[in-house]
Image (tube, rainbow, N blue to C red; front, side, top):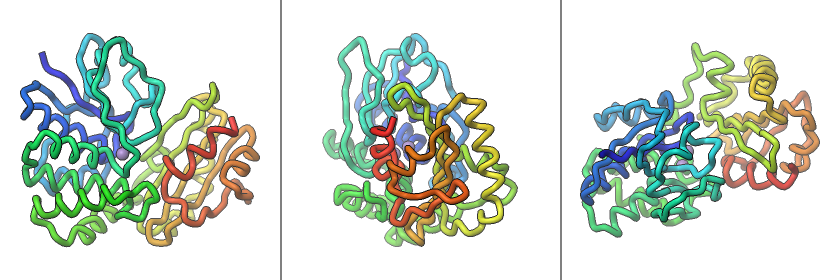
Length: 305
Ligand code: MN
Ligand code: MN
């Protein structure tokens, strides 16, 4: 019997690389684990997998009757539909604790740090397992992605230290240059529809029974989207209807200017204004210094619902 390891829906690089890096560790420890994914990989993740010659984990969305480890989430909203019929052996994460519960004891590695792959690096160290060069390179990229090259307020000393150690293992000393290449790959918008952009890194949250969708586009320069803002807002209205959401938020995050253009479609936008201490104009506002959905948006929004 194999155990499957996967990250959240709409997987980002941390979810995909985390499945691969944790599966390698677990296999070394004598378990039989297969990395999988719940959805399409991003342009950024494709860049990482190609750079380090790794196979894309297989797509698998149903886990009834299986044993699993989950990485980079603990919310039911980000889990496969039949997760309640799976046995969760463990959770490796760096988000707020979600609403997933289990019937059996489990292993939990949940830390308030910048990336699940930093947690996995600590697991390798704890078990004294050597990290292969290419896996180290991918883990390093996942950490640089989640911490926005150390600029995100979620980044800790543990993350920067992990990147330095991983860069030595993979033999890439100029990791910031590699990270910029990665963010340029991530920033590609040509040919992408409004829906592609709005859902590129999109998560739904249950906030005291109210459904809120929050997407984020991290880009090297958001000005290339200026002419498409109205199109994005129109599509957000459709997403709101289709998924019966109270609020849809998109953050256009400019990693060089270090802030986010906020787009809001809501039944009551004043709640978002209050939460984020801003005033919307044409459903928009600039949030200076806001880079992290997890740390700078979600915790302030939750109490408003
Ligand atoms: Mn993630
Ligand atoms: Mn993550």
